[in-house]
Amino acid sequence: MTYLLVGTSIDTGAFGSKLKPFISTRLNPNGENQMHIGGTFDFKDTVEVGGGYKSTGYSNVMIIVKTKFGLTAAYAYDFGTPNGQAAVTRSGNEIFLKFKF
Image (tube, rainbow, N blue to C red):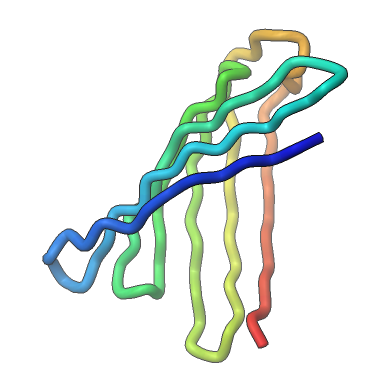
């Protein structure tokens, strides 16, 4: 399995915020490939709110909170109607924690 991700950060010029669009893909040599298109709105490098759409028929919403001491916490929720053989058959939650040394 190979994951590819490309994105950018666009300064909006308002209140220290940025728009961060991205496209990611999961290449599965033994099954169906998947693509995810989305983005977040970053407010002062502290809180990001966003969402996206996956080629498996699911959409997602997410929130990311960053602290000044290196801890990042995120929550995402997937929902929708699955399509394709690689699609999960129900909605799901995801929690993410990262610490930058």
